[in-house]
Length: 413
Length: 151
Ligand SMILES: Cc1ncc(COP(=O)(O)O)c(C=O)c1O
Image 1: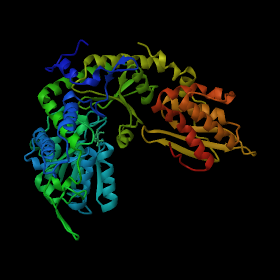
Image 2: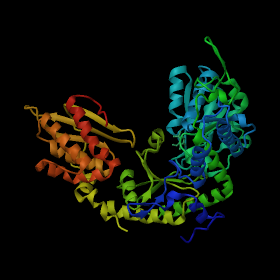
Image 3: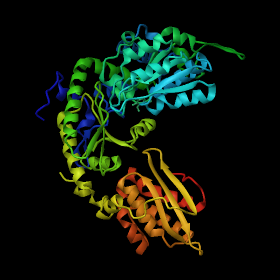
Image 4: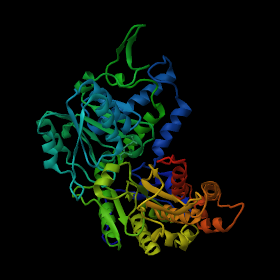
């Protein structure tokens, strides 16, 4: 642990915000290296949700009474938090969804079916999560909208020239692409993607599920058109996600789901829609989770992305250097610009077996195809083990991982 | 800290069969086959069956991509059901599945002793299906269905 320089982040204080980190697993201190699947929750998030239930809970947007007004305020405050987090021009550009998956499906449904025309194409990359593949398969089969896939290099980076060639005939109406791969840790070159896509007349959606956890996102600086993220990976609760979209796009898009809260008026014959974002928010939403997400965003902002990014950068470098000395271990993905997700395989040991052995030492990693089967196929592997880092991850936890992996190697050797 | 407490799951027999299975490989000819997929983790197995004139299973084979547990289970399964009539193999499956879930075997005999090294999976709920996946493929092949429906 000699090459690790502590970042400007008070790790002890951060860890004390997370009650779960004092748990033991199989009698060993929990080493949680699976934050990319879902992050642990700080006290502030837990308290915000409990507090709302204990002191001011009611349905929102409908009750003309004190409880409902307070709850509405708390829930709607998260819209401001999310707008600030993304540097959105307007809070009405923040649509609440259940998660990233629903946000992408919303775009596939409303923009894909309502604005794109048969004969146009959607362009994704070869390193997408299933949630940014399957909705486009469904759109293609339903509407005859072609699905194109931009290749990646062997290092696990977007092949930007090939990407541009996919746009050259002008048929691509929408680029929907990850901002950071959940398997390889690769960041995609977001500004360049937007420049190239816009030059060819395509809109751009970023799946920011991973990126927003590690990096400050400014949708106006990126110049993109849609940005999706999911609350539970950003230290918030499950059941709440965000779709940001430019206002004029939201206005042009038909609703996704129909029901209460999304209408302006309903008669026996017809309904008219509320303005965005409510047009896309049918039914009673995840009220408590929305309130929890606001607390999570404020928690992240209080620590600051600069400190988080520096800390995780150091952790990632430490992990890369420790893991690459383990015999038989191959790190999957060698992108220049990468975040705190490290996938690997080990000769003679399947990822599941690795995960089970690590688990017995109290170390939680993920193993499998990580909901990215086409990427696995592209890489010629069935599965990887994946360690992922968060603001609360310690360099000593990476040492524990590396030491245990050395023993796993002996075990299967 | 040691990984020794994992010996209940990864017994030497399992490591051996996982590394060097003796019934792996697609045969040139076969009478029935079925695939088993575990979509949650990407494990895949295909079982190939041939029968003798009396209808007994001869030289069962498999082709698998997966963890040590699933490969070892497929290999031990092939050993256990070779020479059995389909109904006998079905009964072994039921007993094996119970042992994988509970760690117990109510009616031990030679076949169940052969499979007993896999009983340790019951302590790892997420791994039980690794051990049972090849058996589901076997059941599907016996029924003449191409694809196992997983639990
Ligand atoms: C890159 C990426 N996209 C999308 C998702 C889907 O997130 P959710 O399941 O919360 O919708 C995930 C996480 O699983 C992810 O890592």
